[in-house]
Length: 258
Ligand SMILES: [Zn+2]
Image 1 (cartoon, rainbow, N blue to C red):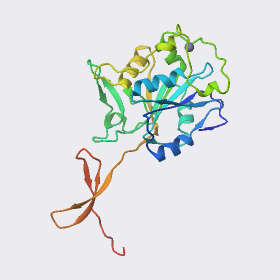
Image 2: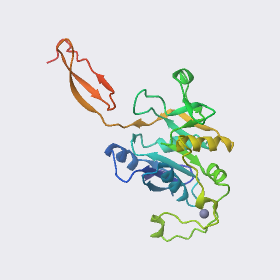
Image 3: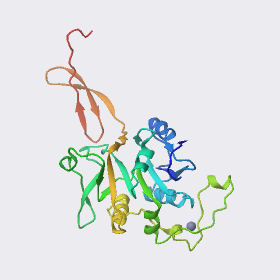
Image 4: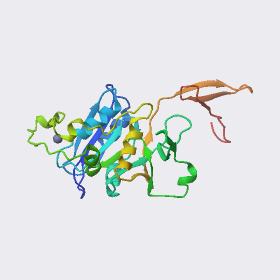
């Protein structure tokens, strides 16, 4: 993370991740994130993604006006956070697609009575740019302003903040009666994922989440290039995305190619 000379308040650049690191390209992107002066980078580490995200929020200092939660399987440009801050809205994330078929956008425009959600369709976004209101989305890349988190927690954190430089590198402790000590901004509810639950809480609290159609995240996924043999006797490369998802490529030799 690098601090940029921009007119935005400080915040927490947070990574929600498992115990083992994954993609080098992600870390190259995360290292190159431009953030407002005074911002800090935090890690929420563990097997429970809801708990990881809550840990990042709990780490916010009194002066932090926002948290940006990132997952570790994405690639993006260094100015992404600044561009999302420029939107000046309570809750916004970039556009990205699932890393598995059918590659829907990780953004939802309809919430079903059982709490599940329906993907934003190509027809809904065709020809549009800028902020697109959603009822739910993924949590990767979501920028959340402090008033949202305070309202969802049921109150502001008023714990004293007098950490030494050494103590600042540790997770922040809250007093027992602080609403932020036990707040569950993200939580699983039955089969409903923690991000659907979070975005529902945001809407119920009177805030509108948006996907920024002008900003995007690449979604990194492992694949194999396999040798496939066609009925015509051709040998063609095949992209194997696992789970029986294979995309065969037809190689064409152009006139003049060696
Ligand atoms: Zn507190």
